[in-house]
Length: 161
Image (cartoon, rainbow, N blue to C red; front, top):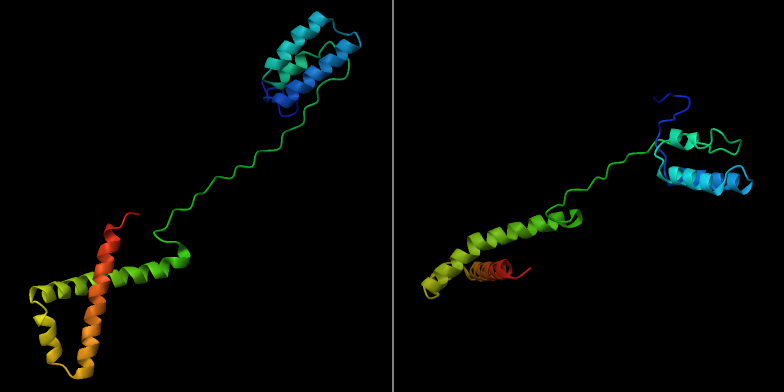
């Protein structure tokens, strides 16, 4: 039965057990305990779980007795593990930009490259022939970039990580 004032039912730790054994040794040294009594009490002290069990070892002995201080309350702080992001926060915008480029390359570059290959290059030439020279060069450059981006995306997709 625990009371607020004495806390006799509070559990003890190795520090309190060691201190009790040391104090029993002191009583043995001055002749208050025999070697046999010391051995018995030291065994009880080594297996004690509560303050009451240790205090009972000293009831028939004068000071020194073990002293018990109220333990400080444990400060519980839960470990919070952040959820991993798809990309590091500093590179998240880069990740989104790369995703847009990959989608564009696949949606535009791969079909254009496929049509170009199917038509033997005739599709691209026919498209370029109908445009003014500057616009034709720009269109050909865009198609080339998109085809190249489609190839890069395809290579990265099957690249081992």
